[in-house]
Image (cartoon, rainbow, N blue to C red):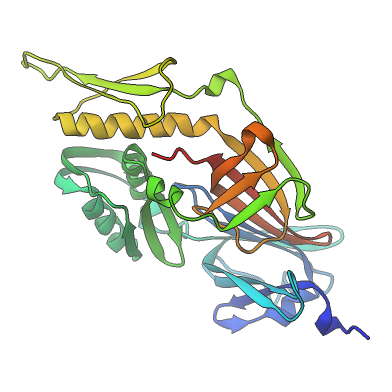
Length: 343
Protein backbone atom coordinates (compact mmCIF):
# COMPACT_ATOMS: atom_id res chain seq x y z
CA UNK A 1 0.00 0.00 0.00
CA UNK A 2 1.40 3.39 -1.08
CA UNK A 3 1.95 6.02 1.62
CA UNK A 4 2.26 9.78 1.48
CA UNK A 5 6.02 9.37 1.57
CA UNK A 6 5.83 7.31 -1.63
CA UNK A 7 3.75 9.91 -3.51
CA UNK A 8 5.11 12.09 -6.30
CA UNK A 9 5.25 15.53 -4.76
CA UNK A 10 6.99 18.90 -4.56
CA UNK A 11 8.12 20.57 -1.35
CA UNK A 12 8.86 24.27 -0.86
CA UNK A 13 11.66 24.58 1.70
CA UNK A 14 11.89 28.05 3.26
CA UNK A 15 14.30 29.66 5.72
CA UNK A 16 13.14 33.01 7.12
CA UNK A 17 15.69 35.21 8.91
CA UNK A 18 17.75 32.09 9.50
CA UNK A 19 14.87 29.98 10.87
CA UNK A 20 13.46 27.01 8.95
CA UNK A 21 9.70 27.49 8.47
CA UNK A 22 9.03 24.82 5.82
CA UNK A 23 6.37 23.00 7.88
CA UNK A 24 4.88 26.22 9.27
CA UNK A 25 4.30 27.65 5.82
CA UNK A 26 3.01 24.49 4.11
CA UNK A 27 -0.54 24.59 5.52
CA UNK A 28 -1.04 28.24 4.49
CA UNK A 29 0.58 28.18 1.04
CA UNK A 30 -1.73 29.16 -1.85
CA UNK A 31 0.90 29.91 -4.47
CA UNK A 32 4.64 30.29 -4.82
CA UNK A 33 6.39 31.87 -7.81
CA UNK A 34 10.11 32.14 -8.49
CA UNK A 35 11.06 34.41 -11.39
CA UNK A 36 14.54 33.62 -12.68
CA UNK A 37 14.84 36.87 -14.63
CA UNK A 38 16.55 37.72 -17.88
CA UNK A 39 19.79 39.69 -17.97
CA UNK A 40 19.50 43.12 -16.44
CA UNK A 41 16.38 42.36 -14.38
CA UNK A 42 16.16 41.23 -10.77
CA UNK A 43 15.15 37.73 -9.66
CA UNK A 44 12.21 37.64 -7.29
CA UNK A 45 9.99 35.29 -5.31
CA UNK A 46 6.31 35.72 -4.47
CA UNK A 47 4.67 33.81 -1.62
CA UNK A 48 0.85 33.91 -1.50
CA UNK A 49 -0.55 32.68 1.81
CA UNK A 50 -3.97 32.08 3.36
CA UNK A 51 -4.21 34.02 6.62
CA UNK A 52 -7.30 32.52 8.23
CA UNK A 53 -5.69 32.78 11.70
CA UNK A 54 -4.43 36.34 11.04
CA UNK A 55 -0.92 35.27 12.04
CA UNK A 56 0.74 36.85 8.97
CA UNK A 57 -0.89 40.19 9.80
CA UNK A 58 0.18 40.11 13.44
CA UNK A 59 2.91 38.08 15.18
CA UNK A 60 4.23 36.58 11.92
CA UNK A 61 4.03 39.83 9.96
CA UNK A 62 6.99 40.25 7.55
CA UNK A 63 9.15 43.38 7.66
CA UNK A 64 11.06 45.16 4.92
CA UNK A 65 14.53 43.68 4.53
CA UNK A 66 13.74 40.33 6.15
CA UNK A 67 15.84 37.56 4.62
CA UNK A 68 14.28 34.60 2.82
CA UNK A 69 16.06 31.57 1.40
CA UNK A 70 14.00 29.15 -0.66
CA UNK A 71 14.48 25.78 -2.32
CA UNK A 72 12.18 23.67 -4.50
CA UNK A 73 12.47 19.96 -3.70
CA UNK A 74 10.98 17.23 -5.86
CA UNK A 75 10.29 13.78 -4.38
CA UNK A 76 9.63 10.73 -6.60
CA UNK A 77 9.14 13.27 -9.42
CA UNK A 78 10.86 11.50 -12.29
CA UNK A 79 11.39 8.12 -10.69
CA UNK A 80 10.58 6.48 -7.37
CA UNK A 81 13.00 6.99 -4.52
CA UNK A 82 14.61 10.06 -6.08
CA UNK A 83 14.78 13.42 -4.31
CA UNK A 84 16.25 16.46 -6.05
CA UNK A 85 16.49 20.13 -5.18
CA UNK A 86 16.68 23.49 -6.91
CA UNK A 87 18.22 26.10 -4.55
CA UNK A 88 16.78 29.50 -5.46
CA UNK A 89 19.17 31.65 -3.45
CA UNK A 90 18.56 34.43 -0.95
CA UNK A 91 16.09 37.32 -1.19
CA UNK A 92 15.02 40.31 0.87
CA UNK A 93 11.39 41.24 1.51
CA UNK A 94 10.44 44.18 -0.67
CA UNK A 95 6.66 44.41 -0.29
CA UNK A 96 3.69 42.87 1.53
CA UNK A 97 0.05 43.00 0.43
CA UNK A 98 -2.92 41.99 2.59
CA UNK A 99 -6.30 41.31 0.97
CA UNK A 100 -9.67 39.72 1.78
CA UNK A 101 -12.04 38.32 2.56
CA UNK A 102 -10.92 35.63 2.91
CA UNK A 103 -7.71 37.03 4.38
CA UNK A 104 -4.58 36.47 2.33
CA UNK A 105 -1.04 37.83 2.39
CA UNK A 106 1.30 38.25 -0.57
CA UNK A 107 5.02 38.56 0.22
CA UNK A 108 7.38 39.67 -2.53
CA UNK A 109 11.15 39.49 -2.07
CA UNK A 110 13.95 40.53 -4.44
CA UNK A 111 17.50 39.38 -5.06
CA UNK A 112 18.69 42.95 -4.51
CA UNK A 113 17.02 45.14 -1.86
CA UNK A 114 15.54 48.53 -2.75
CA UNK A 115 17.99 50.24 -0.41
CA UNK A 116 21.05 48.92 -2.24
CA UNK A 117 23.27 51.64 -3.70
CA UNK A 118 23.47 49.69 -6.98
CA UNK A 119 19.71 49.81 -7.49
CA UNK A 120 18.24 52.90 -5.91
CA UNK A 121 20.92 55.57 -5.81
CA UNK A 122 21.54 57.55 -9.00
CA UNK A 123 24.98 59.00 -9.52
CA UNK A 124 27.08 60.81 -12.10
CA UNK A 125 30.68 59.81 -12.66
CA UNK A 126 33.34 59.99 -15.35
CA UNK A 127 35.15 56.68 -15.80
CA UNK A 128 38.57 57.02 -17.46
CA UNK A 129 41.06 54.38 -18.61
CA UNK A 130 38.87 51.61 -17.24
CA UNK A 131 37.79 48.06 -18.12
CA UNK A 132 34.36 46.46 -17.86
CA UNK A 133 35.57 44.18 -15.07
CA UNK A 134 36.92 47.14 -13.09
CA UNK A 135 33.57 48.92 -13.40
CA UNK A 136 31.77 45.78 -12.23
CA UNK A 137 34.19 45.30 -9.33
CA UNK A 138 33.74 48.88 -8.15
CA UNK A 139 29.94 48.62 -8.31
CA UNK A 140 29.93 45.22 -6.58
CA UNK A 141 32.12 46.54 -3.74
CA UNK A 142 29.88 49.57 -3.21
CA UNK A 143 26.77 47.34 -3.13
CA UNK A 144 28.47 44.79 -0.84
CA UNK A 145 28.15 42.06 -3.46
CA UNK A 146 30.67 39.42 -4.48
CA UNK A 147 31.80 39.76 -8.11
CA UNK A 148 31.75 36.68 -10.34
CA UNK A 149 33.16 37.66 -13.74
CA UNK A 150 32.77 34.84 -16.28
CA UNK A 151 33.08 36.82 -19.52
CA UNK A 152 35.96 35.69 -21.71
CA UNK A 153 36.87 39.24 -22.73
CA UNK A 154 37.46 42.38 -20.71
CA UNK A 155 36.93 45.41 -22.99
CA UNK A 156 38.64 48.67 -22.06
CA UNK A 157 37.47 52.25 -22.46
CA UNK A 158 39.33 55.55 -22.59
CA UNK A 159 36.34 57.36 -21.14
CA UNK A 160 32.74 56.58 -20.13
CA UNK A 161 30.14 58.87 -18.62
CA UNK A 162 27.64 57.70 -16.03
CA UNK A 163 25.03 60.46 -16.03
CA UNK A 164 22.33 60.42 -13.34
CA UNK A 165 22.04 56.61 -13.52
CA UNK A 166 21.96 53.89 -10.92
CA UNK A 167 25.07 51.71 -10.88
CA UNK A 168 23.07 48.71 -12.04
CA UNK A 169 21.45 50.55 -14.97
CA UNK A 170 24.85 51.90 -16.05
CA UNK A 171 26.52 48.50 -15.82
CA UNK A 172 23.69 46.81 -17.70
CA UNK A 173 23.97 49.37 -20.48
CA UNK A 174 27.70 48.83 -20.94
CA UNK A 175 27.56 45.06 -20.60
CA UNK A 176 24.73 44.75 -23.13
CA UNK A 177 26.88 46.52 -25.74
CA UNK A 178 29.58 43.92 -25.14
CA UNK A 179 27.29 40.86 -25.35
CA UNK A 180 27.68 40.29 -21.62
CA UNK A 181 24.75 39.34 -19.39
CA UNK A 182 24.34 40.69 -15.84
CA UNK A 183 22.64 38.78 -13.00
CA UNK A 184 22.36 39.28 -9.25
CA UNK A 185 21.90 36.10 -7.24
CA UNK A 186 22.59 35.08 -3.64
CA UNK A 187 24.66 38.14 -2.84
CA UNK A 188 26.75 37.97 -6.01
CA UNK A 189 26.99 40.22 -9.05
CA UNK A 190 27.50 37.84 -11.99
CA UNK A 191 28.68 38.80 -15.48
CA UNK A 192 28.87 36.15 -18.19
CA UNK A 193 29.38 35.95 -21.94
CA UNK A 194 26.09 34.94 -23.60
CA UNK A 195 27.86 33.58 -26.71
CA UNK A 196 29.97 31.26 -24.54
CA UNK A 197 26.90 30.04 -22.63
CA UNK A 198 25.19 29.25 -25.93
CA UNK A 199 27.96 26.74 -26.70
CA UNK A 200 27.41 24.71 -23.54
CA UNK A 201 25.68 21.30 -23.82
CA UNK A 202 21.89 21.27 -23.57
CA UNK A 203 20.57 20.28 -20.15
CA UNK A 204 17.44 18.69 -21.63
CA UNK A 205 15.59 17.81 -24.83
CA UNK A 206 12.02 19.09 -25.01
CA UNK A 207 10.03 16.98 -27.48
CA UNK A 208 6.60 17.65 -28.90
CA UNK A 209 4.02 15.07 -27.86
CA UNK A 210 5.72 14.17 -24.59
CA UNK A 211 3.64 14.48 -21.45
CA UNK A 212 5.95 17.03 -19.84
CA UNK A 213 4.87 19.73 -22.36
CA UNK A 214 1.70 21.50 -21.20
CA UNK A 215 1.63 24.23 -23.85
CA UNK A 216 3.89 26.07 -26.30
CA UNK A 217 4.10 29.18 -28.45
CA UNK A 218 6.46 29.65 -31.40
CA UNK A 219 6.19 32.50 -33.87
CA UNK A 220 7.96 34.46 -36.55
CA UNK A 221 7.28 37.76 -38.28
CA UNK A 222 8.89 40.15 -40.72
CA UNK A 223 9.35 42.69 -37.90
CA UNK A 224 12.00 40.38 -36.44
CA UNK A 225 13.82 39.46 -39.64
CA UNK A 226 17.41 38.56 -38.90
CA UNK A 227 20.16 40.76 -40.34
CA UNK A 228 22.86 39.06 -42.40
CA UNK A 229 25.59 41.50 -41.37
CA UNK A 230 26.33 44.67 -39.40
CA UNK A 231 28.31 47.67 -40.58
CA UNK A 232 29.82 50.12 -38.08
CA UNK A 233 31.23 53.42 -39.33
CA UNK A 234 32.56 56.53 -37.62
CA UNK A 235 34.65 59.49 -38.83
CA UNK A 236 36.65 60.98 -35.95
CA UNK A 237 36.87 64.78 -35.86
CA UNK A 238 39.74 66.12 -37.98
CA UNK A 239 40.50 62.60 -39.27
CA UNK A 240 41.02 62.09 -42.99
CA UNK A 241 39.42 58.66 -43.17
CA UNK A 242 36.40 56.89 -41.70
CA UNK A 243 36.78 53.90 -39.40
CA UNK A 244 34.56 51.21 -40.90
CA UNK A 245 34.01 47.52 -40.28
CA UNK A 246 31.40 45.04 -41.51
CA UNK A 247 30.84 41.88 -39.49
CA UNK A 248 29.28 38.91 -41.30
CA UNK A 249 28.75 35.81 -39.12
CA UNK A 250 29.64 32.30 -40.34
CA UNK A 251 26.87 30.76 -42.44
CA UNK A 252 25.10 34.06 -43.06
CA UNK A 253 22.93 34.25 -46.21
CA UNK A 254 24.40 36.08 -49.20
CA UNK A 255 21.40 38.36 -49.45
CA UNK A 256 19.36 40.13 -46.81
CA UNK A 257 19.27 43.32 -44.74
CA UNK A 258 22.45 44.85 -43.30
CA UNK A 259 22.30 46.57 -39.92
CA UNK A 260 24.05 49.95 -40.11
CA UNK A 261 25.40 51.53 -36.92
CA UNK A 262 27.01 54.96 -36.66
CA UNK A 263 28.68 55.19 -33.28
CA UNK A 264 31.89 56.60 -31.91
CA UNK A 265 34.79 54.13 -32.02
CA UNK A 266 38.51 54.72 -31.63
CA UNK A 267 39.91 51.76 -33.58
CA UNK A 268 39.17 49.07 -36.13
CA UNK A 269 39.18 46.45 -33.36
CA UNK A 270 36.56 48.39 -31.40
CA UNK A 271 34.43 48.72 -34.54
CA UNK A 272 34.66 44.95 -35.09
CA UNK A 273 33.56 44.22 -31.53
CA UNK A 274 30.70 46.70 -31.74
CA UNK A 275 29.49 45.30 -35.07
CA UNK A 276 29.38 41.73 -33.78
CA UNK A 277 27.65 42.62 -30.55
CA UNK A 278 25.06 44.87 -32.20
CA UNK A 279 24.26 42.14 -34.70
CA UNK A 280 23.83 39.58 -31.93
CA UNK A 281 21.55 41.88 -29.96
CA UNK A 282 19.29 42.52 -32.96
CA UNK A 283 19.22 38.94 -34.23
CA UNK A 284 18.31 37.52 -30.81
CA UNK A 285 14.78 38.84 -31.38
CA UNK A 286 14.25 36.64 -34.45
CA UNK A 287 13.93 33.27 -32.71
CA UNK A 288 11.93 33.46 -29.48
CA UNK A 289 9.39 31.05 -28.00
CA UNK A 290 7.59 30.09 -24.78
CA UNK A 291 7.18 26.62 -23.29
CA UNK A 292 5.07 25.66 -20.27
CA UNK A 293 6.30 22.40 -18.76
CA UNK A 294 5.43 20.10 -15.92
CA UNK A 295 7.68 21.35 -13.10
CA UNK A 296 11.32 20.84 -14.10
CA UNK A 297 14.08 21.89 -11.68
CA UNK A 298 16.67 21.57 -14.48
CA UNK A 299 15.40 24.78 -16.06
CA UNK A 300 17.26 28.04 -15.27
CA UNK A 301 18.16 31.18 -17.20
CA UNK A 302 21.42 30.93 -19.14
CA UNK A 303 21.13 27.16 -19.73
CA UNK A 304 20.44 25.63 -23.14
CA UNK A 305 17.86 23.09 -24.28
CA UNK A 306 17.19 21.19 -27.51
CA UNK A 307 13.72 21.53 -29.04
CA UNK A 308 12.44 18.67 -31.22
CA UNK A 309 9.19 18.06 -33.10
CA UNK A 310 8.15 21.58 -34.14
CA UNK A 311 9.54 21.52 -37.68
CA UNK A 312 11.15 24.79 -38.69
CA UNK A 313 11.34 25.81 -35.04
CA UNK A 314 13.48 22.83 -34.02
CA UNK A 315 16.96 23.53 -32.73
CA UNK A 316 19.04 24.57 -29.79
CA UNK A 317 17.73 27.36 -27.58
CA UNK A 318 19.02 29.29 -24.59
CA UNK A 319 16.71 30.07 -21.68
CA UNK A 320 16.26 33.82 -21.42
CA UNK A 321 14.06 33.73 -18.31
CA UNK A 322 12.27 31.08 -16.30
CA UNK A 323 9.32 30.93 -13.89
CA UNK A 324 8.78 28.11 -11.39
CA UNK A 325 5.25 28.09 -9.95
CA UNK A 326 3.67 25.94 -7.22
CA UNK A 327 -0.07 26.24 -6.57
CA UNK A 328 -3.23 24.18 -6.11
CA UNK A 329 -2.87 22.78 -9.64
CA UNK A 330 0.64 21.45 -9.00
CA UNK A 331 4.12 22.53 -10.09
CA UNK A 332 4.82 24.07 -13.49
CA UNK A 333 7.83 25.67 -15.15
CA UNK A 334 7.52 28.33 -17.85
CA UNK A 335 10.58 29.13 -19.95
CA UNK A 336 11.08 32.06 -22.30
CA UNK A 337 13.66 30.89 -24.82
CA UNK A 338 15.50 32.15 -27.88
CA UNK A 339 17.35 30.25 -30.57
CA UNK A 340 21.14 30.24 -30.10
CA UNK A 341 23.01 32.21 -32.73
CA UNK A 342 26.05 29.94 -32.81
CA UNK A 343 28.62 32.67 -33.31
